[in-house]
Length: 220
Ligand SMILES: Nc1ncnc2c1ncn2[C@@H]1O[C@H](COP(=O)(O)OP(=O)(O)OP(=O)(O)O)[C@@H](O)[C@H]1O
Figure 1 (cartoon, rainbow, N blue to C red):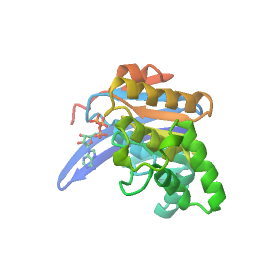
Figure 2 (cartoon, rainbow, N blue to C red):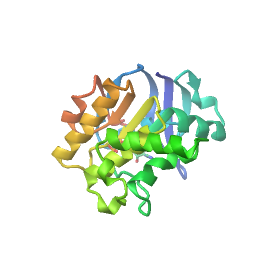
Figure 3 (cartoon, rainbow, N blue to C red):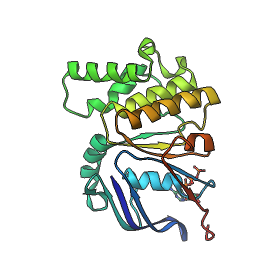
């Protein structure tokens, strides 16, 4: 599903260069649930951003679902992202003035779908995260755990093959973290989604098939 060959990433800050990833080779298989662990600053979010084409590597190639994303233009990437990959973040990133339902519908508005198709997909996504009763609630009328479940529904409503999760339980208590992990596990097992998840929580990583632990680069 994802193939990285000799990927390096440096960030440039004025005259300073911060090297983060060096010559990384990594294959992530279709249907795999992969956890990324390691110290703060070791490059987990950087790797997720590269795989999701939010950022470009300084060197190397990244192929996702048969497409070499390092060779695509920004507009090709925007289209590709909307159909192939979704992000789930630690702090949900919901739009405060929109209801849960409208937040979930948002990515579909970028696709040419009829309003009945949008309704069917959003209702299904809400039911999948067990929040049908909260469709009309705004984010500030929902708990953190419920907001994260809305964010998961928004991520899956476009039916992407790949879910990139950046500390999805980082702001949740154990009970809500467990609910979020149960949903991610169901999406992996029953819907075949490939999941890459950065986490600091070993019990969340246990649910994954494989864990890669990043070392903080000694040049950092
Ligand atoms: N846009 C940027 N500009 C400059 N440096 C950056 C940028 N983004 C990240 N970095 C640096 O890259 C390194 C890796 O950061 P990254 O966020 O990938 O780590 P992480 O493992 O996800 O950390 P955490 O567990 O705290 O989320 C850090 O030293 C960070 O300061």
